[in-house]
Length: 389
Image 1 (cartoon, rainbow, N blue to C red):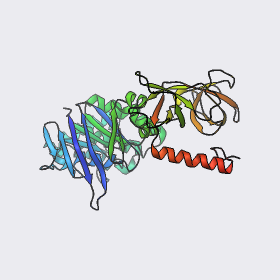
Image 2: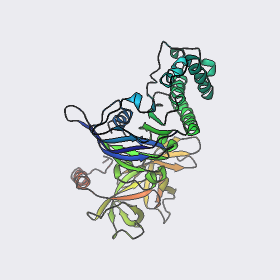
Image 3: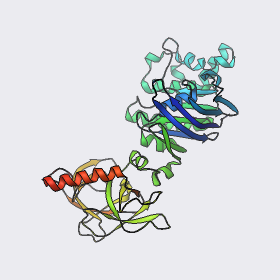
Image 4: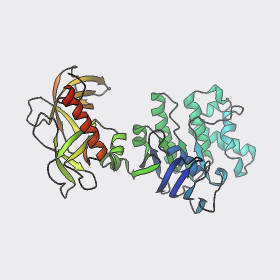
C-alpha cells in the first residue's frame, strides 16, 4: 500500500559545518510520483539519502505513513522504514543470479526461499527479464541490470520507492525506453515515488509534481505545468529551459492580471513586449526577461510585429523540425528557436516574442552591477555584447 511521506523542516549539516540540506518541507500524498530536480551539489541526493535513513537528519522530522522515522528523538535505519531504493549504480550482488538478486528483497518478509524465488520470477516476467533469471549481473547489459534493480525494488511491495538518478548511466535511446518502463511499472503498483535527477526533460516526462532544489533548499514544488509556466525564481526559469535572457526596461507597473509591458534594450523595434510578472514589487526601472523557446516565433525582418532582429548562427535538425540559434542585433543570443523549415546560417530573421513563455523578474543589485560593467566595456572598447568590433 502506498504511503504518505511528510518531510518537515529537514536539514543536514556535515562535520565541518557544510550544510547540504536547509529546512526542506514537503508532503507526498500516497501514489504521488515526485521528482526532485536540481544541478549537481543542490542537495537532492543528500535529501533522498536522509529520507532513506542512510544519512541522519540534523534537524526536522520525516514521517512515512503513520511512523516518524526521523526526528529529534527518532532515527530508524533503512531496513525499518518500509521503503525500497533504486541506485544509480544498480547495486546488484555480483555473485547471485538475477532471480536471487530480486528474491533477496523478500527475505525480511519471512517467506520460504522457494516462495521468494517464485515471486521474484513473477516480477522478472513483469519487467521482461524472465528469460535471464539464471544469469549473473555481469552477463547483462546496463539496461537489463537497471530493470533487475527496479524489479528488486518493486517486488518487496513497500509503501515508498526512492530512485537515485537510475537512468544517468544509460545511453540516450535506452534511457528514454527505461523512463517509459519505470513510469508504467511504478504507476501500476501505485507506489509513492521520490525520484531525483538533473535532467529536465526526464523530470517533466515522469513527474506528477516537481521539486526544484538549489543550494540545499527546495525553491519550488508544483506540477510540471506550473513550474514551467510560472517559475518561482530566475534560477527555476533558467534550470528548466530558456531560449535566453534579456535586460528590459519596465513600461509602467505590473497589471492586476499579472502581466507587465517591457521595452527590450537595443531592440530594432519600439514595440513593447507583454510578459508575465514574477511575484514581488519592482526594485528599479529595469528587469530581466526570461524567454522560453516556445515563446519565440520567426517572422520576416520587415514584419511590423517583430520585436527583434538577428542572424542565424547555428541550425540543428531535430527530426520533426529545426532549432536555430539567433544572434541578436545589438547583442545577446536566443537558443532553441523553432522552425518548421531549414534556415541557412547567417540568414537575417525577425523574431516575435509572445506573452506565454515570457516572465519578467525584478533586477537585483548583482544583475545591475554585471550589466553596468558590460556596458562600460562596450563604451570604452567599442565592442558589442558578442565581443565583435
